[in-house]
Image (cartoon, rainbow, N blue to C red; front, side, top):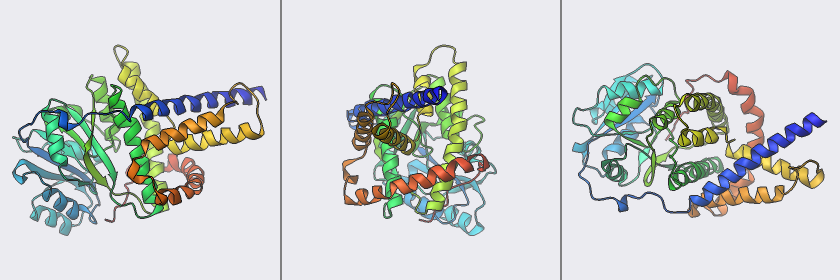
Length: 382
């Protein structure tokens, strides 16, 4: 019984710490962050838009077309697709409208590295997009301005482009919460923004340096750790919006989350290694280690709610008090992080379905993590 109480107290302290972490940064995120309006006017740099793609025939041509229709001079950017498992008709179609297609066998990290070998010699910057991404108006203008100011790495604001079903809306809101707490708030506090995997802008020479021999599909996590270990800070630019397709089917959602959990376990191990191998204490790597250890937001919400229920019906131990306060703190953290335009009746109706989705996820994902194959990719339809 004593051992059980100790385990419960350790878990309680763990969840309390990250409730406080999320609350503090969610509050900090309400302060102003970097904006291109504060930067001087800059000449137009030349971009390479790199799109790693695996079996994305449904969306690839539309994505290339949307890039070509972006309001940035076409003479100042090129589109390079690096991938495999595409139909010859898809490859011919994207090449016909102006994109380069590079056959590359491997995962996302290898695809980006292969694409860098084919970038034009006069290129200044690189923007990495997923095969389903669409840039909002002025995205490249905003990216250009911040990169011309000398910032080496910048993460744009990725958000959902499809928000029709409750699942799509909840997934979009989840990403907006991540944007607020782990990107906008981090940079406002003087730390480094987290990378997402797309909507990332780089100086070409710096990306080549960072991407050397990056393997696997978790390239953004590996890049992030390398960047921080080199003492470089990743900025977050909320103005540079990139629309991303959100999953609409529960089965796909669960496979996606399983892949993420499996990758996150590897990320924790890699983060510990980078932090341990640092020559001196690196506050940014330490903060990244805390983020790696932070439970997923839905798991944290479920855990705090269970401790709250336990407090209501059975109370023992030092940490079995004030769970009402912690539940309220976490609820405030989430509300502060959700953009105002999403707070409406549609979101309220979607939240009603969240408990059932969480139960399914907690039942299915842990059993599937160690069976997940690294090369699983989320299918796109739009």
